[in-house]
Length: 213
Image 1 (tube, rainbow, N blue to C red):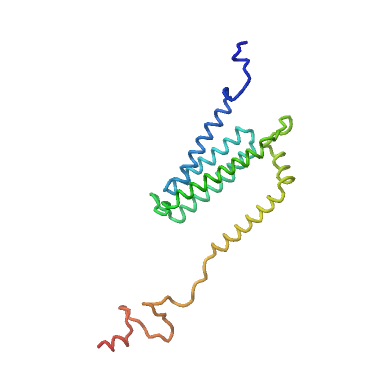
Image 2: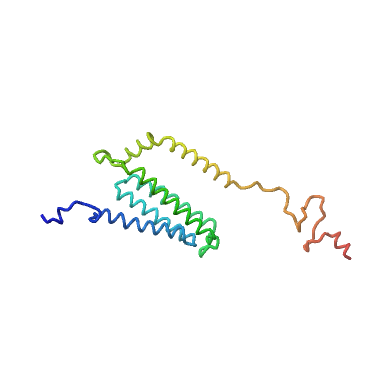
């Protein structure tokens, strides 16, 4: 056997799965970047589909099939479809939207970079000395996910359920139509009541017409 074949696996000899993971990650990052920088709302929603689908592929490559299908069913299949229906029902502009061109782009970029750096630092610091038992069940299986969710993360899970319930109640309240006002709308700045004299087509009261004569 050649010395090259006997060389241990390392950073300079990646496997096919690692190469695919890196390529899919680059595509996902590019799609997410286009999503937040494009000025066309419909294109942003479509690029969001690519970004969320790329995350699902990343989960599959990490042998977390359950998390991958949850990503597809909830985010790609529900959230993005809801966004597209919202764009269609609200008659969103098809071309470039002037509302998407904000002067706070650089401030938003700085906040996003700072948040990403903090998230990366927290994840690296948390998993620096973590050991994963490869002999047990897969980390992304339903058994391990359910046990971790209802044993170690019970309080965040319940807090998230309360937040989702509050968001649902708020959406219902905001979507309710305001009660129709029984009084007719004002004409030329004057409210029309039962005791008010009739108004002609020209918007002038008959008394004012006689006074003008």
